[in-house]
Picture 1 (cartoon, rainbow, N blue to C red):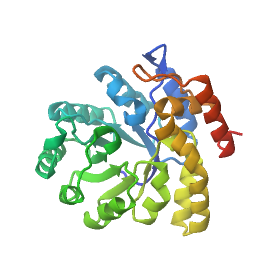
Picture 2 (picture 1 turned 60 degrees about the horizontal axis):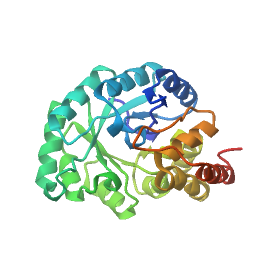
Picture 3 (picture 1 turned 90 degrees about the horizontal axis):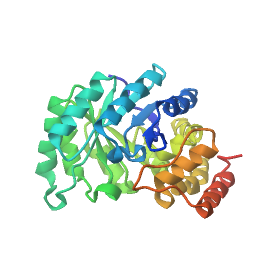
Picture 4 (picture 1 turned 45 degrees about the horizontal axis):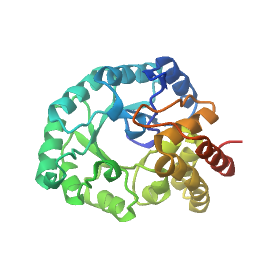
Length: 295
């Protein structure tokens, strides 16, 4: 099993006239391959996974693996409320070369999603999966927040190897690190938490910002490893406005426009998401210049 460590972008899904573009995917990956990114997350929230067909998902996994450098780790977002669909997609991803599966917490029946429900769901998925499972906790989208006690118990399963935690709750990250098995990996899910997360024991980040500022994200992680905390914190603080812009402020459309400005292909998001208006484009461009991501 590859070492789950470092910085991963949840890569965007390129569409041309609403159709998945494998050519544009190759273009983006060819640029990221030149960096020290640990790998790629395909079909995450920023990859508009919920807007893709099953056939598109399989094509994305297949070609991300094909275009990636051999040392890069491929993490496929395979989770859904349907346990049968999750297991089937996870094993299809494994057959296409994915190294790990990122499995979202089921959330449609929110009021019933408690400890025992998650223990049963994730344990059964892990039992039947050909590749290791990473729990994906993203309350912003799901409206549910998995409990520390639940993750602690799930961390004992040999095929559940980590959690991507996309909250901005420092205490929660510390509790995940301190209450889970020693070889269980905690990964932060937003660049705003990279410094506090890594210094609290997280092993890396799956970060929207890493799509457009991979070297800066990698450098923050490296500086922390070198115990150069002052420089790491300084760079972290510098990146916060850009991270906010391509996540909570402008969302996927903002991230894709930022990619267009920086030599990647972003393109337009898929309906019902809409592209940025001209005013928002100018504001986002200004933020990228101010943070020196765009020069």
